Length: 198
Image 1: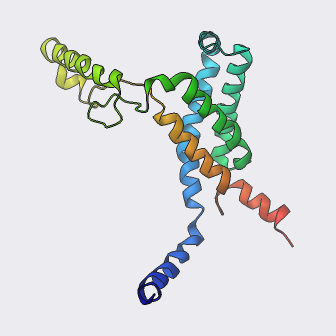
Image 2: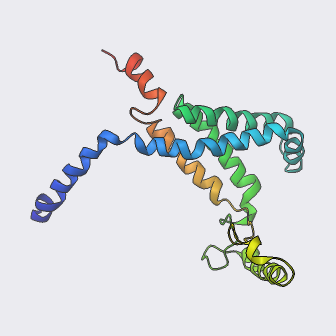
């Protein structure tokens, strides 16, 4: 008990002083997620017919309606997340969208988004991809300008697992519970003006 009262409690007290800036964490999540969602929604808008065909191929009921809902959810939801308006409300359809993507599109590919054969999460598909990647690199080293081709980064194979969708889901879950952030969201100022005012 002496260790707790002597060390833990004083440090805990100092850490509590950082709560004045607690809005920065939700703001960081919002600024990270918003462009991803806006871009995804915009891509669905530009290639709407292709998305409808893809949703139909996946076996979605009413693929046109589902494609429209996904597009609006991501595009409008991303904008609302960016400005911190209706953050908790809009997190709900965005979480649903991420779960639908994870379990209808990415589930069969396992966890990893990028095929990393050294990962303990690698499945048979990822392990098999390593041989293909090595062969592609060998061909490019022999017949291509490999240094130029890799000057922007290494070649990888996309595994298309659930990693990103579930990560985004968890980030939206945090925003659902904590909102857009103290001082840094329109939600905060609306609540202060209309809900929390005396």
